Image (cartoon, rainbow, N blue to C red; front, side, top):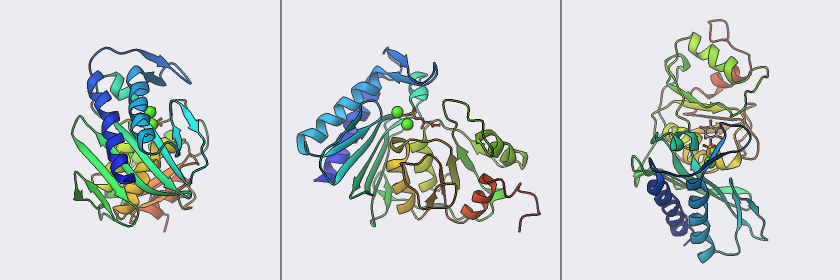
Amino acid sequence: MLKQTLIEATFAGAKILQKYFNGSFTISSKSNINDLVTQADHESEQAIFEVIRREFPEHYILSEESGEFKMDSNIKWIIDPIDGTVNFANGIPICCVSIGIEKDGKMILGAVYNPFINEFFFAEKDFGSTMNDKRINVSDKSDVLRSCLVTGFPYSYLDEPNGPLEVFDKLIRHNIPMRRLGSAAIDLCWVAAGRFDGFYEHNLKAWDSAAGFLIVEEAGGTVTDFKGNYYSPYQPNLLATNGKIHDDLLLVLNGKWNLDNSKR
Ligand code: IPD
Ligand code: CA
Ligand code: CA
């Protein structure tokens, strides 16, 4: 029942994305002028809430645009009603609904759906990950210098040692193909599907990564913070890889290796 409701809620949100995409909708700003929220974000969120509350009115909900509805429940829904809002607002079809479900503090289910290319990613703890009902697995590349990576950048410039630009600079100086899709949830799913060998990002929020991190793990990948600790969506930094390039990327993220030949 929980699984069915998760799927129904994800599709209910996605229907709103389809309704407004490339049409007219209101847009406003949040933390800065380019941190956007649209009418579709709010409506998608409401459509998702409606499905959840119909079946499970007692569950705890954490959702990007409405915040927290604290309930005395061991089940928590973590919702991003549109991940990739800037893409959505510009008519770029790389955006999705992302919903993770935690039980007793552990992620047990995750769903990410991009309706524009009809890709539905799903994971259940210990039962693997699927895309449109077919099993997916991470890639098996083991050389970071031959890998294809993706990252994202926070809405506000992060000026700190080993910050987003410093790490990006090191990687592109070694001609590593780097991509920036603009949706952390899709970045994670594409690591799970083996399209990317790794994804890192500074300063994510729980709703960006809750579902995607389980989808990567269940596809055989590794997800940690930048210190190599087991990932928690409540801290900001995420590294998700096929596992084989994980330690090398941790060195790069911590300024301990410039990708020259001197590391090992
Ligand atoms: C954003 C996207 C983007 C990432 C940002 C997120 P939003 O989420 O996932 O790829 O770089 O850090 O905030 O605002 O589109 O839900
Ligand atoms: Ca997001
Ligand atoms: Ca969002």
